[in-house]
Length: 195
Image 1: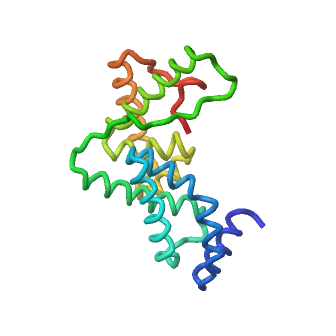
Image 2: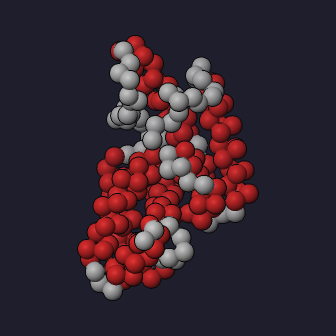
């Protein structure tokens, strides 16, 4: 049984009241939902709350799940909408990045190399936080969740052309912000946004 068929079966069972079936979704996708919420909201506690709210909303709306789509795509669309609503409620409050911890690639670089990588990643995160939610959402879905243009379009309720346009504009804005900070303008293996 392929994953999509398995997820459709789990969704049917969850709709029928099987809590264990829904628990599989929670176990499987909590990390992805948290990652998306943290990248968009930039607050650990808000991201934890978002995970609970997203799964609660998903459980309540299981009847609207289309088994032809991947469950994670549907779930991330709920998460994206929730995070955008939270960002709109903030009304211009800028976030600090003091509590951001980044995963370092293997290879055990020395302390100097680690410091440089951390600075570059922090610069990327700062630049990401300067983007409006319109551009931040598509960027997070593309570069942190590796969703295709079509999947992003489904999650965000946009056309593929709009997704491509927003990503192009987001990359340009990120490059300008990084250049203004004196950072790199092209991401390579070591300086790509942390996943």
